[in-house]
Image (cartoon, rainbow, N blue to C red; front, side, top):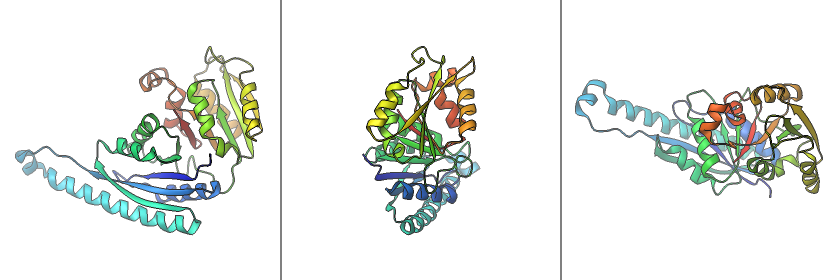
Length: 282
């Protein structure tokens, strides 16, 4: 299946998604040959009625100001997106979704269920996009592509090296299947297997992965890397620094999110310190 119907999530609160991120998403989808729609989230701030607090702090006025700023940011971002996407020949739809500030992530997940892929740009640590990533991963049944413009940027024209992280898990298998259209376009596909990090992963675990990818016209090579007592995040960082890939494909949250946080899982580490765009499936 080709990735023909892709959705870009655009944030509007507390800061709008940078235009550079919109431009990168448009360029990437143009390289894939798909169609890109944008969904801008317009926030609505629920306030409990309290005359004293409202009188002293002007909470209602502040909420209305933030809602107006969010609406204006949505309009501006979507106009920029439309101009870029139409020029690139990938324009699908420009949508605004009004939602309660605290429920907006779940609403995005519902929209993604009828798309092939959701692209989510990360910006600042408090932009709320991480909540959107998790909601889409756990609730949409569709893959997510996460990037940070200027730091973990999307490739603009052609795909060079793509890394497939493989640990034999269900999530890894799902990620491989979902990412096949991208893997077919890559000039170089490497399968990363970290030995001694999980009891289920051993030498030779990539042989059948190579066979499966070959059946789909993808030539891949296996890199077996020893954990050597290091945390998985450190192993991934060192490997990515050595190979400088344009994309990392991996299963997202193979354990529960709480367990990932406590144990320092791969997903939690990569989302917190992205050095390359990450294609995630759960």
